[in-house]
Image 1: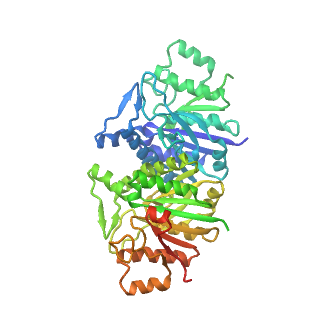
Image 2: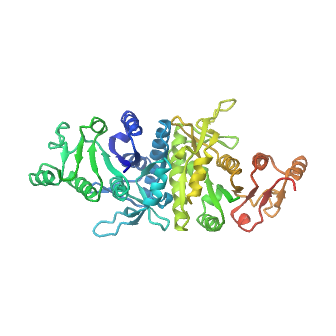
Image 3: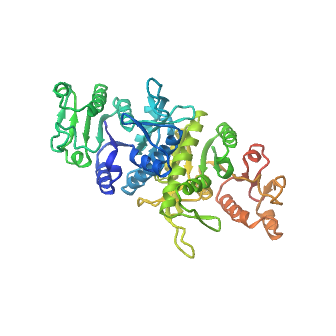
Amino acid sequence: MKQLKILKIGGKVLESEQQLNDLLDAFVSWDGWKILVHGGGKAATKLATQLGIKAQMIDGRRITDEAMLEIVTMVYAGQINKKIVAELQKRNCNALGLSGADGNLIKAHKRVVRTIDYGYAGDIDAVDTERLTQLLELGFTPVFCALTHDGNGQILNTNADTISSALGVALAPYYQTEILYCFDKAGVLTNPKEEDSVIPELHPDNFESYKQRGIISDGMIAKLENAFAAIDQQVDRVRLGSVYSLLNNSDTKIVKNS
Amino acid sequence: MKQLKILKIGGKVLESEQQLNDLLDAFVSWDGWKILVHGGGKAATKLATQLGIKAQMIDGRRITDEAMLEIVTMVYAGQINKKIVAELQKRNCNALGLSGADGNLIKAHKRVVRTIDYGYAGDIDAVDTERLTQLLELGFTPVFCALTHDGNGQILNTNADTISSALGVALAPYYQTEILYCFDKAGVLTNPKEEDSVIPELHPDNFESYKQRGIISDGMIAKLENAFAAIDQQVDRVRLGSVYSLLNNSDTKIVKNS
């Protein structure tokens, strides 16, 4: 079975030329098929501020009204996606920038309003694995931004972590799939103030124990439950770390019970 | 030989919901392979103004400094490209949004400075026809925005007319290729103030005669010479018109001498 690595990048790495270069240098050197997924929330908030549009957040989640959708479409699919694609091409990696609308690769629906109206936020319904594997087999390296569509002409803002895990789960039957979440922490930490307190390996048993002892914080639990859900659906391994902890193999690995 | 139609859209059609919808409805109904190419200068100028950046033009050509490159990348590859892709998907056309950097499909170099420094403007060196035909044969409808790259990490602003004709010339050996330029005039006019003075057919002989009599205006001559150059390089036919003159077949057709 061929290997597939899905790298999700977000946070500081998108703001630091040096970190991005180091990460992309490593990415192109990896064996097997590769997919990159990126967000860009900070740059979107910056552009919104310049345009006098107020970014609305509830519980750390963005509310995407029409003006904000226009902004994230420009920033994610334009500014950041094309920068990464051009940087990968420079490294002789045949990157292909995509939103979920392109090739109808990721279909979603506008999030149903329960207590909070998230606006044009998309919840994923389907990944077209046949089309996506065709592109991989042609030698393209897909670079997805955090946008999907509803098939009815509407672009939808969609969390990049969720896109990464949906792609991983969809492709896991065809490839030995690993998802790498690159974020601002060195991994899952037992002390959130100490970057050297990384838990090297998490599996359902010790995760349960860390949770019960209150060692893993609330914000991380959702991320990890998402990761374990991917593992349950044939994804081989999920890794969480910063650029350098991932490159130095000192990140957190999430696996099935050994 | 399979048919290929390359439709370039610019000007008012990108500003008018109705015109764009009518044109896309027609586009998806055409037989054969299709490629869409779009600009977006007006929307880019609008965003620049909102951000307090002055759009510089010399002889109707944009000077692309670093700030303007950032803007056209957001507007062309983000805002406009994803809107068109989502609208085509709505019509069950499997659109794939692209810049020249994606898939390394269109390589260019930064325009050499002679008398005017156009900044980050790209002059096209090569179209990867093999990759592009692979995407067409998979059933994708490429939607190119007016951006290319230099293969060294630099995105370049590149005239959408020029991209259309470069694609047409590159693909003409493989498909019976037609290029349709959709702009704000009903076609090539003998009286620029009268939209009903369209010249139905232009070939090298009558073009020469119109030029000598001063009937075809300066601004149109460069566009037409570009079109005749494409015809000389195996492109079957070039059409120039507005949304409705193209749809009603009352546009200007440029052909070889009959």
